[in-house]
Image 1 (tube, rainbow, N blue to C red):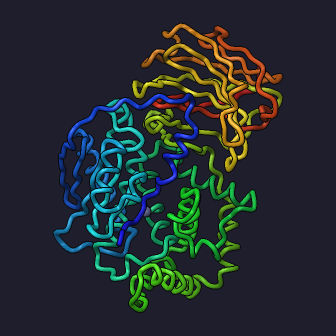
Image 2 (image 1 turned 180 degrees about the horizontal axis):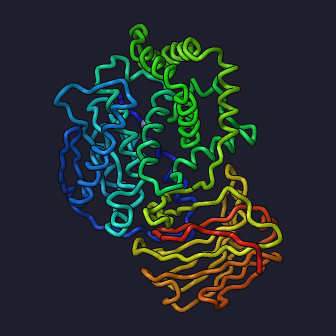
Image 3 (image 1 turned 45 degrees about the horizontal axis):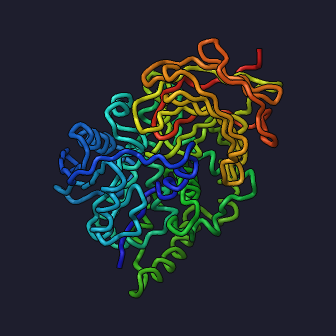
Length: 477
Ligand SMILES: [Zn+2]
């Protein structure tokens, strides 16, 4: 029997690869034996596999920093003297090998998991664990922090003597993991910022509601993330619903207490017992919060009130302490961060500065316009490469529309890694015109059928990372 709780990142790899900007470049890797380092704190032990000593220590510090939050939000306590155990991996291959070795090959393409059998968690440094990004982020990428805390919640539940922990329905357990992780990350945001990852989950659910695709309670209470495509949409709904429930703190505490005390279903096949428990938990929810119809109406109203400013179709973006935006892709993939507000009417200029960080072969920053239909994305982007190019690409209907590719060569120094680049992309009259340092480098007709006027704008990176000022769109000049 394969016993595994699956982390939140499952569908990301496919999404990241699907949105890559150019074909076929393998991420450079160095083969090495798994090198183990560990670091302990009062509540946790972190074992690093191909992770630098500062990286392992940063993971330990992140878990220790979250310990008071776990104690505050969760009604469970691990036995005295027990530490949470988290394995962190420098890349997906090492993680995947560990999952296969643990007898859970189905988790090999996940990026985070907690195993029932060992009650230990496994997390890949996400999206990148290199020293440049760790230095910028104060030790640890935000998305890794998110996943560490998420898995820690699973582990506290598993280790604290709740006899039915392996039967809990996804909506409550995964929703709780996500909510605690979101709060851990929220506590570290610069003033006035909402974590992009958190805003993204809110946007996913609000977008689903606007399109008549909300996963309502009749379905959500019986949803398993591993059996939902895309998984991140299921996680976002569970996170949204648990956050909504937790706004009624007294009832939410009562719900967790009653869930903890719930008698186990009759013995039998575990999957069958989970189905029974899902029904039991649905009844428990009604006992504590009232009829589902009225509860869902209040949840929908809460979703309507959400006002996320950014979303990330592919990850991962985070606000840095100095207010800039780090956009870092998973190896071989892309990252995108898109504004939810429409651009100024009548043509606009997307402007700011960016700096490429040394990373994968790509070292490419992206400027994205005309973004529409998140669940069937359409957009146009300009790819600005450190190798000396500006390339317009169009994505629609699940494919790069290659016939619209327009590329010009520029001197490689134009976007050199580590150099601040001031850009102004004018989107008007059906054309894209890019000026860098006041000089026009690219001017071309936009592909037909893309919504330049009201589609979203944003920034991204491909197979690497870039730091942007907060992107801004101003009326055309
Ligand atoms: Zn999880």
